[in-house]
Picture 1 (cartoon, rainbow, N blue to C red):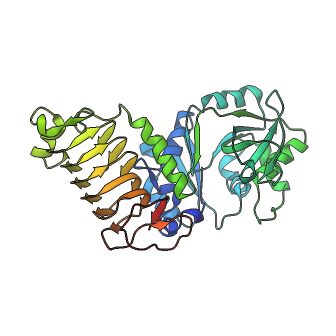
Picture 2: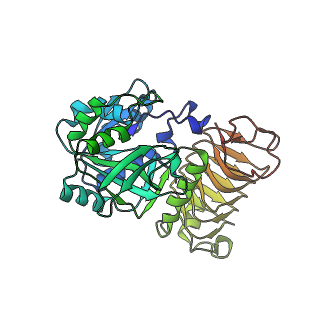
Length: 385
């Protein structure tokens, strides 16, 4: 599991938080990835970390709560995906292994690809998907039977439109290939060079199309897209104890709705005057009063939402405060506060950050520079540290 990237496209958020710990639908990106590995029957995971290794270790420990055994491998500086394979050589030994990029979000079943890898005994098996602009990706040129004829990394003239997505299966043969390649023009050991070396040596390399959803959570725009994707699975996941029926106004059904009772008796849950439409999850310890929640929405533990319109496609992290506000298509990281003012739309609000009338609005992802006051709807994806 590769989790050492710097997240430069997500700055300023990633100045203090590794991108792999940024939450999507209130769950860290890396946890989504580790849970996918678990579905493949993986039990032992080597996590390659960089300068934020301490935070990642603190978040996942030895992996026991995920049913995994996790070991951490430190990469001193980003030096390419193949360098991560080199670094993990002793951990991997002669075993077959799966390499998973820790900022990729996949929704779909990976087990058919694992079965194909086992059946074909290819030295490398790739997942690919068609993309509009393959020049931005590593791509694979496939024969009709799924054999890979060539791969190229971010070529100005790519051999196909099939991007190699962030899950790879390898046999131990890849270690020899990694030892024989040299750094690319950008100074990194490219995994595509190692794969091409296998092809040139006549080793079997195969690929298959991934038919699920794939996102690379490497930018604010992509992070919000991932959030929408995972929140779309929220439908049916909420429990009656925290979520009234869609469209129900708790003012007209007080005393019968479990969420209303929780809000009155314990000071948490969906309280009086709140209307809920669509799939909404309110975690234990959170409180929603006199507000409208338009799902999909998740409200994290300890958060308070009052007199606000929240949703759709919003993840409110733990311990947040939202008062007199409109929030749509947004991620609020733990401890963030939105207090009235302009609508927060298409934004990622950093941990502990406060967005109020007359105070700093989120920082545009495209520039990384501070904007003016929060007096108008945010027109494009933004991030505030």
